[in-house]
Length: 500
Figure 1 (cartoon, rainbow, N blue to C red):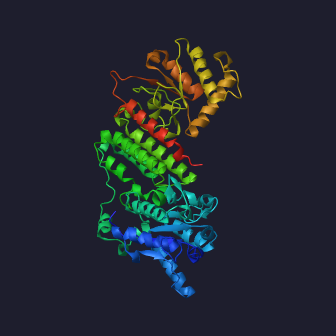
Figure 2: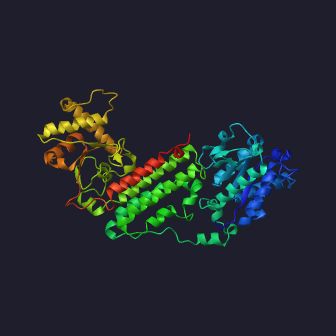
């Protein structure tokens, strides 16, 4: 990465007193690790002076604490040498590790000797207020043997254990995913010329949208930025950002620099690439996120897809349909949309909250869980309205409480009034349901029936249209868009995103 890395090595002096290294006679595992690590890392431009290892040379308590404090305030990476002794060290566990976490310093654990359930030992994270298990730090523990962490002392050849450990740490430091804490990056004393050039990078570019579309696109660009504002992205996934001051990942930044008509498509594709790469890094344990942080990242990425998907809509068509401000549950609209998720995307301000992957093969790639697909047979308004009310009743109230599905004959004034109340409350909470009719039933939705639904049910009716003479609602293939988002949701549901 062309930068200098200041490394803090945290360990227990009790481990050094054992002097049990077989590759460096007369010293313990901590000093043996230091020797091998220096030999590996100096070949990549990191000097011995940039690695802090408390060798006990500082005789006074005042000097020792000052040196520790200075190194912890300056380091870009902390390596914790794990043993039963270091886990029991209050100084390691309650001072050194929490201070590194407070600054957002990446932490790598190296397992020296067996310690039962060491990976479950928790460290308080002052930044989030939560605790993080040792096994959740980068790589989940080194050295790796067959994909699992195995203590150095149990390797047949100690040299192999150090070689594997140092190579893995080197790859992490030199990799694109490694970023030092923001407070160090802004300090020019600690960066070389290559890193200094990155500080001169222009701030996040601001797209210039055409005047007629700027309000629409700006609204969802602002939502997109909010999706990446959570501290977990800055402290654990800083490698996504090209520059500390950028508000969006570098891939999304680049995706915005296209023709406005292609912005939604471009950003959705960039987000899918981010999700895919993060998933691979989690699988390989290049990145290790605790359960709570995985949940935060998952939710933020889904919200980002929601904002980007709305950028795929054509604001001119939305304007002619009266849909510039989504979320009006008591309005009926005929949309030039072919998918149910596409039909409801235009009327949901946060569509990602209602998306679901279908249970059956061969259907739409993505569905809206609160959209009610229904057909209405031609007939008088009262009969057709009660058919719609019965469908809404069945969808609104769980069958566990109503084993027998409601029928149109059950829809008296009291039941319809209850539905209206529930629909109004849902709309208030942004969770409104919608009827979605196929295009060939357009004629069944008479003006009288529309008025009845609005007045009696406070629920919207969306009539899907295949296009034809109507202007397309989407600027990007609707089918491909939802296939793309469906694939992203499938990746986010994988085990690596849901650690136990």
